[in-house]
Amino acid sequence: MKYLFIIAMEKEASDIIEHYKLNKIDDSSIIARELLCFIMHVDKTHLIIHEYDEIENNIFQEFSKEIENIINGKPIQYITHSQEFMELDFYVDENVLIPQPDTEILVEEVLKIADNIKKSNTHNATIKFAKTTEKRNELSDETADEKNTSKIRKNNDDDKIKILDLCTGSGAIAISLDKILNKNSEEDNAEKLKEEYCNCNKKAVKNQKCGNTIIFASDISSNALEVAEKNNESNGTNVKFVLSDLFENIEENKFNIIVSNPPYIRTDVIKELSRQVKHEPQIALDGGKDGLDFYRNIINEAPKYLRANGYLCLEIGFDQKESVINILKDTEKYCNIKAKKDFTGNDRCIIAQTLK
Image (tube, rainbow, N blue to C red; front, side, top):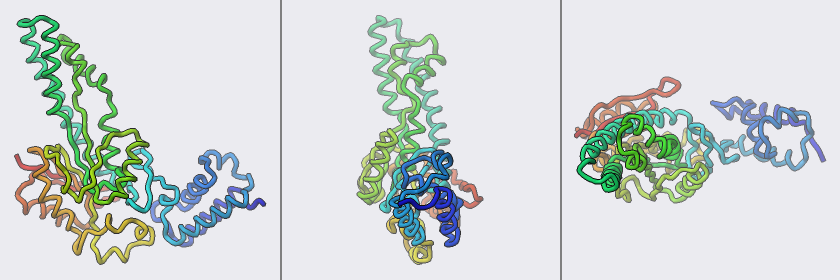
């Protein structure tokens, strides 16, 4: 048995979604098309080319069932198990929050900070290397090669950038950072050093791993970490995930950057949220009576785990800027506190540095 043309069914679903006002960001036709692509296991180009093909009855039945789920508030991302973030694809289910475009602002700020740290580390590494070459004449070439390589490796271990993502959920923040920051190969980094110090020991430089970044991420939910590990594998990244209630099981204590998008919705507000949000895990939403519980804990504990002049980067609710800044100031452990706005002009994240 066959039913509607593809284009007709897509239009019908779009009208239903629009009628129930089920989406606030995407156009209803986009949601309808994404759902149809998922059920038919085809891409959007296929739908355009075959828009007047007829639909098999089993496809229609499944499509109708999922439209009913969407009417009842289930986000399409939990149906298709897919959400794009920082141009990467992430698996999502009801154990994790759906990564939102506004959070990309937080990631971009961390990338800027990490890039500045990398440049500083690269500069320092090349200076250290240049000093070691001054002693080459005192040794045979082969012995000098070995000693210089050993020294550079030791310095490199100290210069690696270490980032911790708290309340990682799907792992979207940590994985995006790992994917972008570690995209340059060791050979690319070595080539940069050789260009800057063309007369230096090339064998030693080849073994230099300048600017490598190690990403750690934690979450209190083992189910969330299963999702994060799946995304870690599918995106080809190497984030180190830890089951931990904030810092509880974090052993590393020399992070350059700690980043977090913690639960920040007031407990009494959660029941008033849209039907879509109610499908998301409550543990990842509830920030306590005033929505600030996690900020207090993270802000007070973070200096113990950050290097001197380390960075704390936090996503915040649109009305929480002053409250979070006051918490930071009250500790007397932070400086250079600043806020960043999202695409809609709302305050979205807070950046602060620890004191020396």
